[in-house]
Image (cartoon, rainbow, N blue to C red; front, side):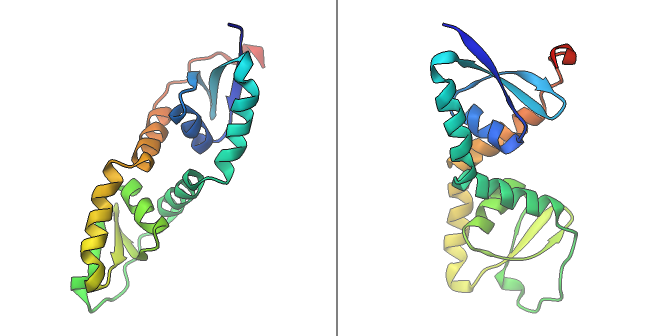
Length: 155
């Protein structure tokens, strides 16, 4: 089957494509290259558009916001209602599910959780581990680790 090379410049979109089984060829600078069979090239392009209105794009946006967040922790008197999350993906998952962000201490993201919602919060943290968002986050991290492997001579 004939194939074409597709370039994806957005890491989140590339992770989304990887998640959907598209074959990664390598990386040129910040561009991820995919091998796409000619008969599904339009499907590939449509999936790229679908990513922009997907919850994965929203999750990626939460991840990016948390990465850029300065360290900040306000004075807080109700210590029992604070929950700390050290995994950035899990914190993004909690943020996108409406949990109130309080601050950041080093690599730890801090949320305020009402006493009545603590069990739900803890369960959602566990749910993240078997969610597609965790898989998406793993794809993001894998793509970041790819060495630049395709020469720029055909640009």
